[in-house]
Image (cartoon, rainbow, N blue to C red; front, side, top):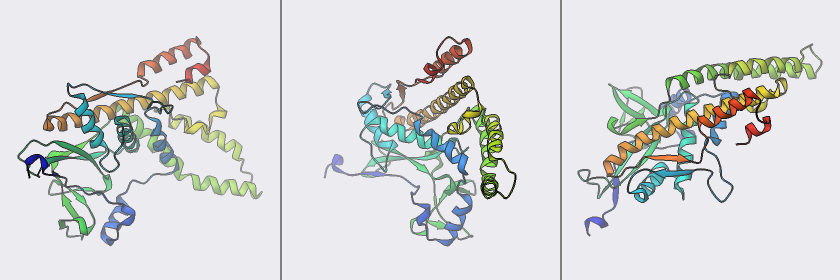
Length: 328
């Protein structure tokens, strides 16, 4: 067997498993307390990141991924495979979309997505230059540290050691762990919004009880008046990112203000998208250097902050129809 006929062997340390299928009582108890808890409105905001990159019309993807290096064909093949190790996509645009959206859904919940870069070596010889790589997301609730070294808590049948508390784990290589972080200003704005949404979600139980009493004529609670008041609080609480709560409270606002909020949320999503793509390019720069291929890319055919600024100017000046300002 020649060297080229040898299989590619990776150096991955992290493990992927479904938390719902965990049968180890210690790990199940730990994950139950460590998992990200989201209420109704936080989940809505996170889910609204699904259109962070535009969708096409069946004949295109709505945007284009363009590589910057000299060997663009190999770079595209490497990155398309690397971004979707568990579910291979047929195009680079699909791979980038899946990665960016999932990262964004974590970022809006104030979680920095962490990944392990797995390098693939011919025959498993790590002394040679790797020929490919994969980027594996590590669920945030499973990451920990022992004596300063990163570990991942895993089911016992996947582990290599156990803590004194009975939690099984594997050791991670810190040199191959990378995270995507968003700018401080963006994180600060998100923090205020998420804090408000958590309070709003927690209040839902009381809302349902009061609405039930009104329907049963058991009190003088006016749900319509309450809903209008909540709408005012929502506009203030989510102003930093411009989220419109899926137009739940728009009927209480003037149309120009609704348009302005729409533009603010678009601006926020563009800023978040750009931050995640920049973070991904940093990861690809590190991995690409190891395999000897420039893997950084840019996204073409998408809205930019300058487009939003132009629409905001038209709105302020009254120089365009309101409907045209949302026709992106």
